[in-house]
Image (cartoon, rainbow, N blue to C red; front, top):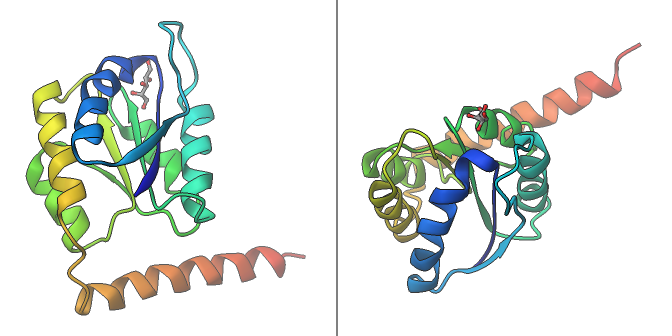
Amino acid sequence: MKILIGCDHAGIEMKEAILPVLRELKVEYEDVGTCGEDSVDYPDFGEKVAIAVSRGVVERGILICGTGIGMSIVANKFPGVRAALCTDTFTARMSRLHNDANLLVLAGRITEDNTAKEIVRTWFNTPFEGGRHQRRLDKIRQIEERLKSYESSKP
Ligand code: RB5
């Protein structure tokens, strides 16, 4: 599986900590930055990863900022992106089983690096459960379609 991973300055340390886990899981990744210590704006990096997931260029993505909140807000603006802010292995597991999350968001200033590593392992190893959860995802897709038609029918 090919993914994109991105972060702001508050997520660099955690990103460095989880890259070896991606290699261990044989997940092919491209790091879109940021790579330095300088303060940057999380929407710039969130957009790079989320647009690629939205367009199907990559199957999944990972984004990291301080709280994970900014990256979640950005990523969930993109149609077809189901970004999940996961703070433990339970939320990681549920985000895959029930939400088929395709973008994992981590909180670099809150979650311990070792917990983040476990979250990543769990997130990649847990399949989507389907069934009644697929019906709910279909409804999310329908909401996206309705939003598009509201926009195009604006006077
Ligand atoms: C950066 O200081 C911080 O605001 C950012 O990493 C993130 O937590 C935003 O939601």
